[in-house]
Image (tube, each protein chain N blue to C red):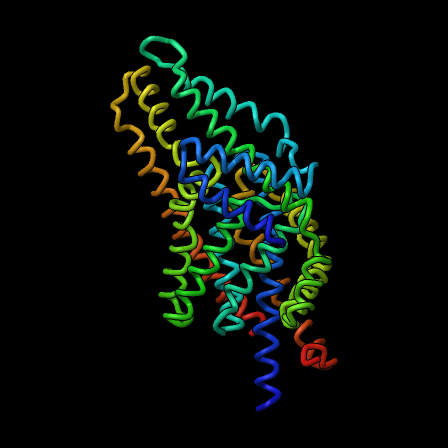
Length: 184
Length: 197
């Protein structure tokens, strides 16, 4: 991660504690930083449905319920909340758009974090091996345990997943030890 | 002796990675399912599962740092999964791993530490909700929430403190999930140790 990305995140955390014009200014700076780094990250995070509820809720809460009039003070404050949420989404988009596994391994190599590099690559290979296993186990569990049984027998689902993990771990320990991969 | 130490060191790397991946995948598959059916308290339920995975991995590789490494791996799995980065679960997994690591490092692995670590892991969801809401929406969101609750209580004629009871019920549900999680952890550790010592 570069200096600008980190600055954007720090500004965002600080802006959570400030609700006046300085907060708005910080959000604007973050917006400009993201515009500079990755224009496509400025899209609205999540589906359209995600934005309907906060928009309507914050608009309704801008009314004064005694006079049923729109309170400009509340509207400004609630707009700040909405903009804050939008910038939060933009930062999430920025992470998803810019950080790749390859960048991480380059980073670990550059700063000689060899163990971390080993762990990250090992994680990736274990994940590939286990992801279809977990999906299959969950598919058959759902098929055999519908309705209330789904929650009643949940410990069996966990047991199968955990037992598979222990077996895989022992296999990998044996494999890595006999090939001496870990020491290198 | 050297061979035993090397295997033990390998176990301290392999077990947290495998269990971290399992935790991350479980969050992706089972967590998505709970999200899809709008299951209430799904965060606490997933924290309960996380506690079970961490307790079991610690029972096999009892070294300092193992639980923290597991949570880092689970975060990585979530980060590079199809759902992408989500602040709530990522902060949640990190804090849960950190609290469990502290508990197991301080108290060693035993029945008491399993109960305390599971308690911290599941109940972490209570302050976590307020902190992530603060970060996402900014501090003034709580005034809006309290204002909304006051208006709802006025509209339906409830006492203005009714939301305190809802909060108490929410915390009680977390406590029930914690007890289940700790008991399932202990039961599964017993079963597994009989099958794969």
